[in-house]
Length: 402
Image (cartoon, rainbow, N blue to C red; front, side, top):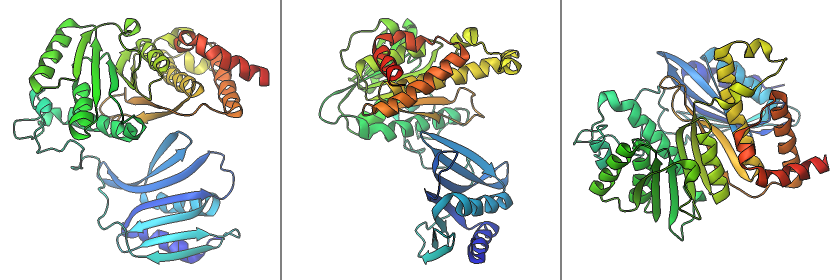
């Protein structure tokens, strides 16, 4: 049983609005959800205070926004049923909570480590890696900033998207080599807002030795981007006209980026990345049609009989398949929110980092999970076919051990 003191503390922190962040860890017993940690932060949605619960479950992060009265109840439940340890960071103090094997709560009060309350709203000004008020040449040229560095009102969503992309890049910098020139390829670069952002952040701000190639089929777009790269003096940024599947100019590529490559063009880029043994893959899929034509399942008939639901399900299933196949060939793969859903529904990003080859037991689990899912949908994914030579030994070895 939890002590009344802990319940009172949680209720007071929520009622007073003084909780800045809560972190809960050290699983007490097997959690059916497989979550190893939960964090809680306040935020403002449509003018009302909510608390966002972020549950870290394997490679996934699940978010749930709840009202204050429900937040207190959920925090109490986390410490009563799931976690042994909690850290409640408030304006006046930090409260370290330890739950004994018998369920008794011990609370240690410490000086506060967060001096200012967290920002509550997604819409208030936040600290970006590319700061507003500091002119960035390519952002000025592309019409996102004015000459003084002020972001134009109609371009603020694009500014946020660029900064979100750079945050995702910053997270994977530790996985990139530092002792040689890094080759980075952006397939389907288009107008190259994000290609320029990637180059500027890694080359100008981080000082990495990089060579970036942007590839697209549109000659006029490539010509325009090449002119901008020359204008900015970005001598290690090159734009080429070409097709993803037929690009073979490099023997080794360290990072592959593919943003909104349509349908199986995303798979073609992922195949290239795997064969190059790229250390980092960043992919925002678009317009997944392949599985829509393939998926058949009587159990799912109530869902699949509706075109719009089948389309959304097929897109999600496609990305789940891509992620699992990348895991099988030795990547640690995450599916992340790229930008807010309110700005675009195409907001899912696949981020994969090259890791150590999974153990036989881990591989068996991944393969069996993948094969069961693919068979359930009666799907024949492009990426599996494209990587058949690499996947066949792994799939056969897992089948033999089963």
